Image 1 (tube, one colour):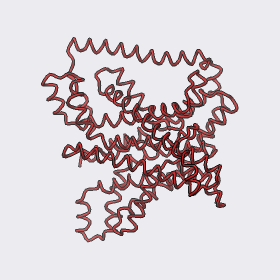
Image 2 (spheres, chains in turn red, brown):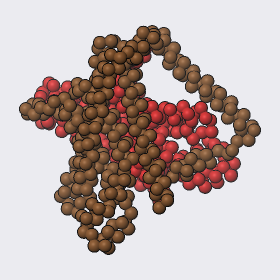
Image 3 (tube, one colour):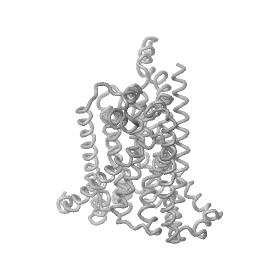
Image 4 (cartoon, each protein chain N blue to C red):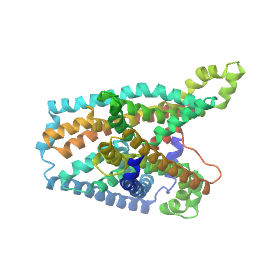
Amino acid sequence: MEIILENWPMLLGGIGTTIALTVLGYGFALILGTALAVCRVSPIPPLRGAATVYVEIFRNIPLLSLLILIAFGLPDAGLLLPYFWCGVLGLTLSSAAFVCENVRSGINTVPIGHAEAARSIGLGFFGVLRYVVLPQAFRTMISPLVNVFIGTLIGSSLCAAISVAEITYVTQQLNIRTAEAVLLFLVAGVIYLALSLAAASGGIALEKALAPGRRRRPTTTQAMMGAQQA
Amino acid sequence: MSTNSSSATQVLFDAPGPKGRRRILLLSVLSVLGIAGLIGAGLWQFAVNGQLDAAKWLPYLRRDYIAFLGEGLWGTLRATAVAAVIAFPFALVLALARLAPLRPLSWAATAWIEFFRGIPMLLVVYAFLLALPAYGVTFDRFWMLVVPMILVSSATTAEVFRAGIRAVDRGQHEAAAAIGLMPRQSMVSVILPQAVRLVLPSLVLALVSLLKDSTLGFVVSYNELQFQGKNMVSITRFLVQTYLVVSGIYIVINLLLTRVALVLDARMQKRAAQG
């Protein structure tokens, strides 16, 4: 237990870095993913195609491969980023694909009649999305999007492989120094569990606050397609 | 659902008139130019740094390069297959345990599932790599990678099975009870066969995430594709090229698996629609 107390600042720094990676990566992914989803439902074929290709690539690339490519591969092509921002970039690119899929299937749960009604009162493509479809869609998307957040949190541990000093990396370093493996890994595991439980309960609270009565749940396959795994 | 969803996105805009069509054409041309510009800028960046030289790309067509990466790919597929073969049945047992009426059993399964779902696999890998040897427990590299894969995948896949079991119509339980089957019999011979069929597409997707998880062989130095890429880099120094080729291989395999899942799902939906 002493080891934990002695190295508390280092662990705290690790927790901070993990949270920073997750929040930044997820925040940018939310923006990029929503933009991609709008592209995918837009009437402009090249944009649809480009967004589809993006999602297919970044949903299917293992996050670790992506991080290694960005951190160790791209400097060769003259794109040098600090490792922390490599991590944020990798998490953003990969999570955006999952955000896009979930936003798109959220849009599809809005009854067609609503979009038709919105169009018949004269709203254009962006008007329909902005005022009628997206506000309803976001409510059904909360729980899948919280899952993407947790996926980003868990994925952020892979940044340890590109030497970003987040919890997993700090744990491993402390373990080399102190050889108190079991205790350290238990503490790290508890920290991750606490963070993802906090995110999950935050999501449930948000969902309750915005509950629209009855929700349409996506099928298991759709949930899996949107589910993010490292 | 699929026909429904495609029309839902089509209904967001009217069938365009002549003016709208011209605008769509204009925007299409502009976005093609924009996308081409982005790709061009990327290629330019590569070219300026001499990363597009044929000498750096052509070797990947050479037999020894392909054999070298093929060895890694074999390692990846082997780890994924072994992990899946052990993890999926185990996941089914976990799901049944979680749904069991016996409270302690259900709690234990729930704790296992939530624990391994909530922590990153890399942490489990490090625990196996660093913590266990301190107690004299050592595995060879293959199991160092595969055991954490099994632990994590069993938890996520158990939830898939649970969702499948709960998705089987209530009437099936009642009908099974009505013809005098005990709860266990009805689970084995009525519910499970349907549940497994329902989750088949999701299982293929679980295979995709197992394949992605196998990249952590990079950390334990097990000879899978990502690690083999690292080995290749240390010999050839073609960093971007090797990692791009490796990532490309992963993308292609996962893309194929995802397609299989979609086809299975579509067939299932069709069958369900026919009733």
